[in-house]
Image (cartoon, rainbow, N blue to C red):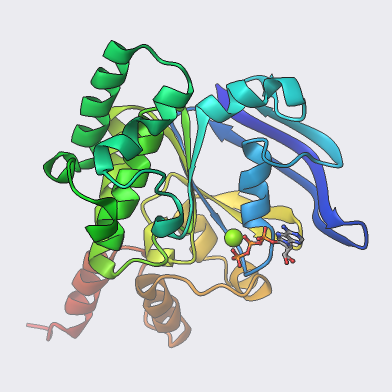
Length: 277
Ligand SMILES: Nc1ncnc2c1ncn2[C@@H]1O[C@H](COP(=O)(O)OP(=O)(O)OP(=O)(O)O)[C@@H](O)[C@H]1O
Ligand SMILES: [Mg+2]
């Protein structure tokens, strides 16, 4: 089943500068999709269109079979699409972690008892239970983003969008957030769309969509995308380091398989450097 269907979407913030120029994309239930593309290519705009924060000029967009263009559907859409943004500090609504996590379901009028259950579930899934009574402001960036994800989980959305959610974090914080999200995708079958500039985060995704000049120019597995040198050049993207090295080796006439996996690359290099018996 497709949870998102977008056809020929056009959007602009002002009439002289179209941002999306006929974008089409489908996202399957339970998929882990990465959306990549250069700065200002329209990635965040696409995220806002998916959860109905803005409305397209033309084209079709359905989320869980609901028309996301219609104002009367916005409540239903927002209950089902959670977005985690870049800056963890802008996403906290309450000063204590627990209060922050229950804010969403309280606003939706969920019964008390169920809120309690959702709180426990969300804290557990994101590994934030240990600082449930802490001041959110005292947490690290990675911890804050996990609290932000907990707050979204408490709403029980079917789709989670990460819009550069790890870009203000240190490597450890990035790892914390990505491992929570991967677990939710696998265990809870949550559909995840991650918008990121970190190509290393893209490697483990099911599928990658490349946004360039207002349209999706290619979708494919990470390997298909990152071994397409013409595409990378045209869209100003650098492949992850293992792919870069294997592409470079092939250009030098060293016949190694193209790989995104560091260990595979190292094994191949070791084979090459082994002296013949
Ligand atoms: N609220 C807004 N009002 C007017 N123009 C906007 C607004 N938000 C974005 N834009 C413009 O729309 C275009 C696409 O912006 P968008 O933020 O969607 O790109 P992006 O791919 O998310 O970029 P980045 O990688 O820098 O986050 C840019 O030219 C941007 O300047
Ligand atoms: Mg953006």
